[in-house]
Length: 62
Ligand SMILES: [Zn+2]
Ligand SMILES: [Zn+2]
Image (cartoon, rainbow, N blue to C red; front, top):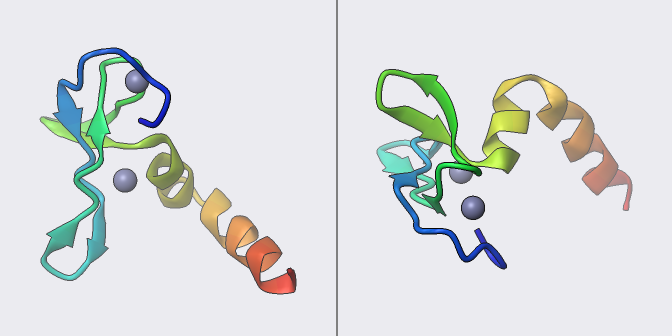
């Protein structure tokens, strides 16, 4: 994560595009475990939990 100085131990496994994962480097603090050896970055954690739709609409209105 930008501004985070902790060691990156994980990568975001969220599928941003078909066959392509986000791959953002995450430390243990910023990685959200969603399954066995599956981790999401904070923004994709939000998206997958349903808040993403709201966020996208806000972006659209800008
Ligand atoms: Zn971090
Ligand atoms: Zn991600």
